[in-house]
Picture 1 (cartoon, helix red, strand yellow):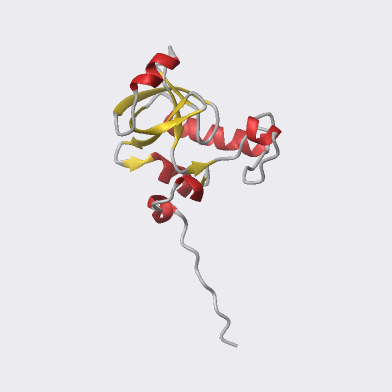
Picture 2 (cartoon, one colour):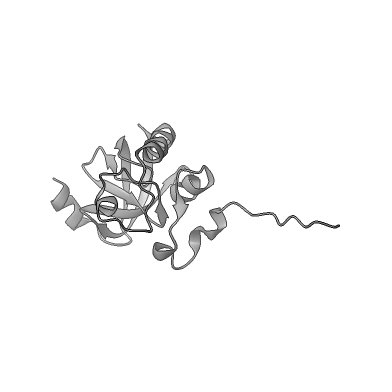
Length: 142
């Protein structure tokens, strides 16, 4: 069911996602419709057996403990709720999408809550920069 559904979802298409399960902090998020969503523009820790970790790709955080924590925090936020998503593309048989939880951008919420970080490679328009915590500059006056 995933492949025909994936073929129907083109960039810019909006679709609802009633969340039935969450694999990790950035997806896949499994929807009641059968869709599998990967959140756009963010990167959460991956489980050590995930493909990028098995291949030793340096830009990935590979930690079962961190991935479990990110997944559990995302589950608490969205499990059983309906997201309003807009497709941006495809990756690994998943729909890459920006999703909203009510009025909030879910990728932005994930960054703000420490579930994931902004992935510069996939946020080229710098949309999610606004979500990153502001860093304060502390100057010593002495």
